[in-house]
Image 1 (tube, rainbow, N blue to C red):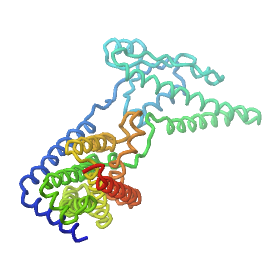
Image 2: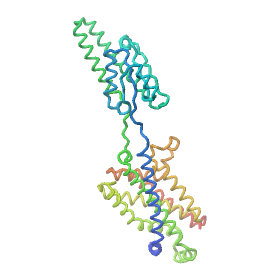
Image 3: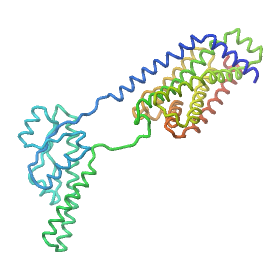
Image 4: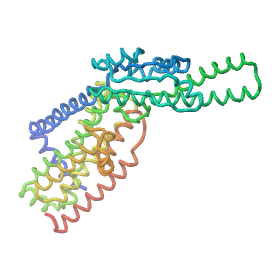
Length: 402
């Protein structure tokens, strides 16, 4: 172990002697990634939304049933978020459509209620505005949905009405119950007829875009800093230094272990500085300090192990840099750092499970959100990569790589 600690001290002294270079290397990614995160956050939060649009409803039937259909549209909070219904005459609606004031016209035809009572599902006449195709399509779907719910409600009412007639109840009671059931079924339809499907995504992105990108950039910085520190240490070992290391019986395995330990020691203060920044920025509330700190250190060691393995495996600097750049790029794209995984194209989704970043980011989100999840996955990945790191060193020592 003594040669490992000796080499670790050598690397740390070299890093401290060139602190200006290190400051530049560690600051540039912070600025670039911070700017990229700001742009990505603006792209997702300021993107164009569908504003409420006007649409005309023409009631040619003028019955209690059609009145309830219109009340359903006017009274539904979900619908009025998207559509501002205008109840008017057919001529006035056509005029508004010609002047591009509305997205479409829905006509409840004469005899609509009577046909529904008799079990006939009468289609609505919906005229869309060709200048507003998206709004016209959405309006048509909502109107057809409202008509379908009305038909379903009327079918239920007809069943109750039939039983009351067979029971020979007084006509006054039948009419009273008929109107009562009509109101009940209409309100039931009103409660069910929602424009949007509501789903709950277990992601900080849904809660707070700033939190998502703050944590995401922090994890990505750990990866980039781990790469830079390993690259910097490779430059420290010149041919003369390598000869002296062999003289002191420092084999490739010990050198790899020393590089990994040096990366851990050097990254430790940066990690706690990052935790402090997240706390001060309001991204993290400071709870679960020990699990969050342990998870952060474990993630950094995971990335350091990954690049230490690549450093042990590849002799030439350009090959090490190329492979590292490809891994970082894949992690950025598929790991969810700038584009959340649920925004990825369907053909890319299966591949995000093959990046280390995916698991590191999921664990970070869980820890900073107060959930203790992901430690087992990270520990398993760390053990696997450290094993690969050792194997790479053994291969290098055997002569396949210098």
